[in-house]
Amino acid sequence: MRLKILAISDTHLGEDTSLLSFPHGRQHLWKTLREQFSAGEKVELEEVILLGDIPDRTLSSTSQIITHTNAFIQMLGSAASIKKGVYVPGNHDHTLWTKYCELRYGKENAACITGPSGELVVKRGKRCDKNDSAAELLSILFGYPAGSSWRRIQEEKRFDFVIANPLYVTQINERTYSFAHGTHFRKDVTLPKWFRKLCDYLQLDKILGNIDVESDCNVNEADSLEKLEKIVAPFVDSLWPSSRNNPTPQSDKLWYLLTTLSSKFSKKRPIPPETRLFSWGLDLPQPPSAPIRQLTPRDGPIDNSIERWKIHFLPHMVRYLKESSLPLDKTTFVYGDTHDGGWGEFTLASGDRIRIYNCGGWVVHHEENHPACHLFAVDESGKEYLLNVSFKDVRVEEELLLKLASYDAENRYSNTSRILRLFLNLLPI
Image (cartoon, rainbow, N blue to C red; front, side):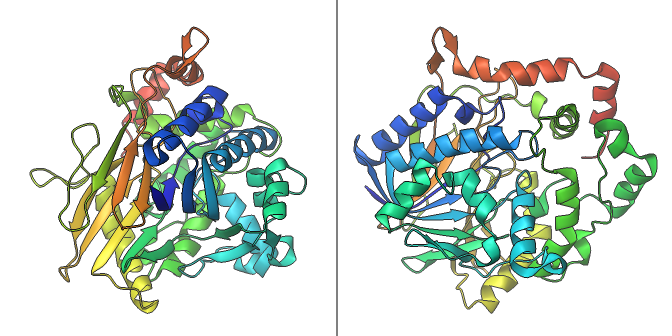
């Protein structure tokens, strides 16, 4: 099977709770990719899309994320023959985008967006970014200037690399594919302005995480995708700053805050008995079976993330696609961020239907909650897939990898006071 697209999100490389920060986790994914898509051979892949929160720049030091992200990229390069890479920043790595923009366009234009196809920073193995703007990102991903992945890119002279924010758009067989991390319609980003001001007044950011959060973030004031980025970027950069060279206790406190607020510890996802590849047909949808969540069920309320997407992001996305002369009648939207995974279909007021996929995540919060380790793919014929990767029997010596990855998370959670956890769970987020 030749793939046009393979997308992955929320690997959070560098974090001890990420399955892909472990060599055994990367080896399992390498084997899975080859078995599911090419009968054990190297996968032929046109585009790999890294859909945000790939390195965890907030909760891991620079040395940690470079070590684990380089190893992850080497694994992908060994599993697949890739012509093009696309990077869409998330919230835990948004500061990489901000720094790129500052170097390329100046500090006054740090909060900007790209065109639908993003900005080309590597063309046929040669850098083409202006003002050395992509150097840090290329270092983290490929080990620039002397890492093995970067040397291979230079020697082969065939690889293109693009950075896009907050949306990357491409077309396959007259179908429009739009990719976003989901930062711009997160719960914390879309909170009412009064609540954010209250938190600012009470200085909850300093009390709970010793951080200085930009509170003036009102997404309702946005009238375009560009304005939305300008509103959201300062808040995101302040709430998920770079830990730089030190994995500090401040990051741990921030982790407590965010994981408790998002109720990740209350979620329980059974361990999938096996890895399964689900497909959505060319004409009529062939929905995947029970192991993958349905984001837009016909007999119940749609997922909260889809509600927020519909209100805060979809109108700007539709306008953006129309202004770029991209058709809406055949559209697929793929995002990450929530770590929940899933699939669905949504009908616009115009009658056009949008297929929706969430790529899930690879972070273990406790051993009873197997992450939604999803990868989105499209083959040459235009058939869409959602690969649900199971880590059921993956072990590190005698220890289950799922249990090993959960130790750090459960330790942090247990060290957070019960009173603080109760207080945070009462907040409307």
